[in-house]
Image (cartoon, rainbow, N blue to C red; front, side, top):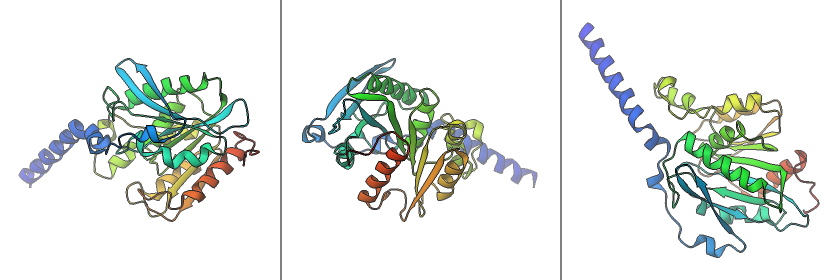
Length: 272
């Protein structure tokens, strides 16, 4: 019995040691991303901005709005862990036609961006992106909404600890990496990039919209429910979908986002 317990302990410690070494490759599978060359050239008005950071340059794209006002609201977007910014412009163009600017920021080490991905480097990139966008003369600095999808939800919540947004939208997002890792028997103290979203939304006093698929096979729906309930001003929208097919109907998603902008007083709605 003692020998068996010893072997079990050795196997478990080896398992934890392996995850300690490989966890960032698992959390940020950047080498699995699929580049889409020349996407930017096909999007009218798209602006490329390179952010100078402590570890190198990070790429970002701004989709300017069709706006009737001098200064317009902006959606600052953080994508999922196996995605790139070039995967997203066409999906967000309908929002730009309603007067909303969209700012896509790449993760360090992804695509053409320098550095290595971690919670620290990603937050540095997004802080720089936030500070850039609010200084633009065509942007209302009091109307910047953070939108994060999947691990991007961790990104925008970590950013919200450094810079206060007008509102936060979390899409298919977990409560924390530690909570996700616990399902695999990994103790929380081994997690190098915890992304504690639940802690952030508990203290965030602005509007929070949580969007989650009830059939999400990657991040359970219960995480979305917990996030919405933890926020003083949280609201949950449930879609009939899983993780990678969320949202299932984009026109419904656009309307939900626009409605949230109006209710949150980020935008007055006169543009649509």
